[in-house]
Image 1 (cartoon, rainbow, N blue to C red):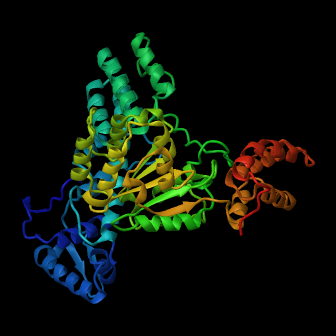
Image 2: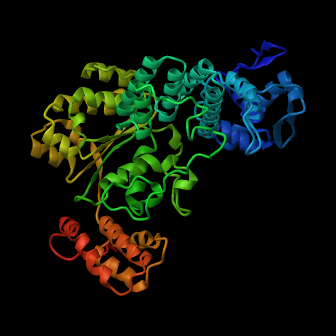
Image 3: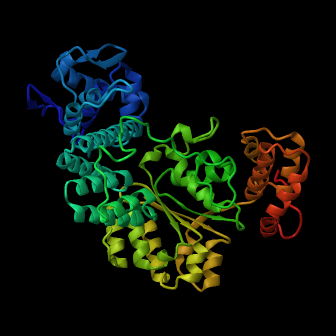
Amino acid sequence: MGPIHISQDALPLHELVSVKAQALLCYLAVAARPYSRQALAGLLWGDLPEADARRNLRGVVLKLRQDLDPHLLISHHSLAFNRDSAYTLDVETFRALLARPAGSRPQPEKLRQAVGLYRGDFLEDFHLRQAPAFEEWVMQQRAELRQLMLEALQTLTAVCLQTAAYEEGIAATHLHLNLEPTDEAAHRQLMRLLALSGQRSAALNQFDRCRDLLQADLGIEPAAETIFLRDQIRTDTLLPFSTAPGLSVFVSPPPPPATPPPFIAGPPITHPARFFGRERELKRLFNLLRHAPMQNAAIIGPRRSGKTSLLHYLKSIGTAVPGQLRPDQTQAWLPQPQLYRWVFIDFQDTRLGDPQALMHRLLTQMELPAPEKCGLDQFLDIVSDELRAPTVILFDEIGVALQRYPQLDDAFWESLRSLATNQVGGQLAFVLSAAETPDKLANQSGHGSPFFNIFGYVANLGPLKEEEARALIASSPRAFPPADVEWMLAESGGWPMLLQILCRERLLSLTEGETGDDWRADALYQIAPFRREQEPDGPPRVAD
């Protein structure tokens, strides 16, 4: 964990100068099982023909055998790390210190030892060129170990609260927030620790920092629980941990994550399992983003055709955990989705009509330095100098920006075009949503910037295909009668918003034990305003 460090008899092992040799040793030691030579050759030299990759592997193994023979188990077909040899491995020790039987109490000393081992992210600043499989493994290990560290810090902080070890708890929470600055629960822990240690002003200042971070990074306000804690601190009514209700981390498990309703009509769909269809559009869009230079795209369609939901799905599907997906849901759209950064900008948020506020939001979500006051030239310098990861900026409702925010002028849009096309090595792309194509919107609003001419692919959203519409209907927790399914297909025309409303109304009627077809009249009344928006010239039909 942290920068790579390999030593033998307490002395740095300088002989392992080959990055591939270091990578192979780390992989075998951490993975803790034998691997075939073919698999290892593909892991480290996936860009080469198999014969060349196997030859390179033989050279690296020969070097490792010379320096580390007792620590490796080498055969003609496989390689493994010798776990019976004398060695120490920080990752292995870290995991062992944090392992404990379910329901047992935490052991503070083991938590402290584990936290002390975490010198930084797994293999920090260690990169292997043209070895995507190895890089993907590193990212997976990095995420798992970071999460274990966060959980260890959270538990250690709770122990400190229970034992009134406030200074140690404050230090642990600062480490937590260094790793996860927008973790609101950690901010609350720090506020409580500061207040209980007599630092009331610092606790209130911490609330302000939490609020500013949440607004800047996530565009949200603090939760009611955080505001209530601030008010308790402000009025000096905060209870100590031992008497405060509901604070013991050893008694009750955390509540399960909120499950969205089966059918959603109105707000955009942000939960991956609730998104259906658009397979063709998704395939095209992700193909544009798989390799540098990434290409730009526009998503157009009438109101409530699912443009915003599609943007959210692009952003979330690649890194969604299994519990957020349906069993048959495609996820492998990108080769290494965890490497991508996704920036979502909703131009219906009027605060983003100010160029400085917009540039600050862009830099923050790109995880780049974000000065409070940032001019256009400084913004361009920061992005062009600092952007390293493939980044996709999702501009929702771009037409609103063009019509309502004159401060976002042609110079601003031209600068974005220059970034994407000339300054970051093809690592930046834009995906827009709008009612019409970007060039047409720009002409209508009087903008002449060439930014609006770089969108080589346009996804025109219409009704769902029939099989996609049927899949949405079939997701109901209670099966609908076949006659109702056919009626909903016909009345909705396959438009996702109308389908969501019809399914919601039918599920509600079944849940309440209603019989007959009275629910259909209510459902038609509910979809009438939206139906006119999408099909003004006649009744809709399901797409082939």
